[in-house]
Structures are given as structure tokens and as C-alpha cells.
Length: 100
Length: 246
Image 1 (tube, rainbow over the protein chains, first blue to last red):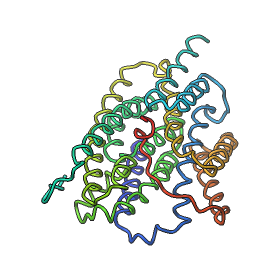
Image 2: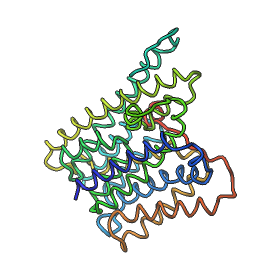
Image 3: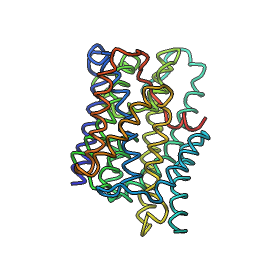
């Protein structure tokens, strides 16, 4: 099942890249298409953040991951490099688990 | 690279290549965290490496392993990854007139169409500089991204319990860093908040992975309804490292 996701995701993403280089520009120059393409990453990333932080299975939960996200938010606001943001989140969650 | 300087050398040629390597190194470090998170989500090191080789788009890869790790189906995981990768098609449109590639070379170039290579190609003062920016950044990131993935994957495999290191909190942080560069105007905030609410509210009722797809659907509806509003929306490549590093 994991392989199916890996291969289907890879083929789909490659075809999108190839399509961009291949199709006549007019087809995707449509303003609405561009707006949707700009909105999709924002919606997906936002949804992924809250799902992976505040849920376990089908339940809403509040645990060490929330502390990790808060640390990441502070790092982002301080314009820290990417790895510092990720590292701050992991370290904070690990410390909270160690202490509780 | 296939862009040998037939005539006079581009003055900033070495500067472009230096930037390309710098971005590659930063992305390689980012790949360490992808490799580790992917293995912590239940993928094998081989599956993790195949993703970096074949899918080769950071955000989509994080999303795919995130949905799988949360117990989502293959369809939900691949669907989220492909939706997130849709911006690459728009990058391709911007790049096509600059790269002018055909046949096999186009097939190869397509795999390198990502945030970083696009950011380093568009906005150059000559087509040659654009092509050099694209190929040097694309190849540098491709090589170091795959190397980082391999190391990160093996590193996480050596751990018995990745949660002790807080790796499950690392993925949302990665998404937050990716999202931050897109939040400079009002509209993305509206979309982000609505998407988060839709996802959280639907979690108890639908299969794992589906809440994220519902959030994407909600965003599409929002865009279609707000169509007559401002027309400042534009598709802008945003390199994680260029953004986060400055």
C-alpha cells in the first residue's frame, strides 16, 4: 500500500511538471487557475499542520506536539533558518515528553 | 548541463553557480529531516529514497509521508502530494520559454522543476543566466536532496523510538516554515484559517487523510467565490532556503 502511494504520487507529480513545460501557455494562464494553484499549497499546508499537531487517529488531542509547534512559530517569527525551526519543534516536544 | 558558453561568458556565471551549490547544501540538510520523518512515519529507507528520486518535490514528499503516517489511504496520500505539486505545473509554464527544451532534455528538465530551481531562473537579465540558474540549482538540489534523504533515513532507522526525539513534531514545523513565506497578504490568511477549521472539524467523521483533501476543496470554493475581488494573486516560486536563510 505504501508502494502504491509512493509510485502514484511520483507519477502524478512528474506529469504535472512535464505538463507545465509542454502545454501551450494559454491553457494555464487563466487567472482563476492561477489563483487556485496559489491557494492550494496554503490550504494543504495549513490543514497538514493542524492535523499532524492536534489529532491522534480520529480524536482531537493536545500534547507535546503543540509545544513543538509553538516553538516552531517563535522560530519562524524570528526568521530562523529552516533547520532551526524544525529542530526547535522536535527538541521542545522531546523535552516536554521527558518532563511529563 | 548542456549550456556551454559558446560566446562571451556571463559575468555573474560563478555567482550563479555558487548560489546554486549553497541552496543545494541547505536543501540537503532539509532532506536529512525528510529522510528521518519519512522512516519515522513507517516507510522503509528504500521507499523514502525512491520518493526523493522520483517524486522530488519537498512539500509533496512531506505531505505524502505525513498522510501515510497518520493512517491515511494510498489514494489520500498520493492525492495530497499531487495537489501540493500542482504549483510545479505553473512554474513549468514560466520556465518553458526560458529553457526551450525538447524531447529527452525536456523529460529530464521536467523532473528538476521545483521551487528552488524556478526561483533561481526567473527574473534573470538574460536567457542564458536563467538556464544556468535552472540547471545548476536543479542538479545541485537533486544530488544533495537525495544524499540527505539517504542519510536521514538511515539515521532514523537506527533509532528505536523516534518520538523520544520529537520527530513527530518536526513535520508540522516543516510545513509551518513552508507556509510562512506565503502569508504576506490577507487572502492566504483567510484560506489558511478556513482550511485548518475544515480539516479539524472533519477529522472525527471521515477516513484519515481525507480532512486535508476537504480543506483543499474548501480553498477552491473560496477562490471561486472571491474571484471578483483583488487581482493581485500571482504564482511566485518561493525557495525555502532563500526565504528561511535570510
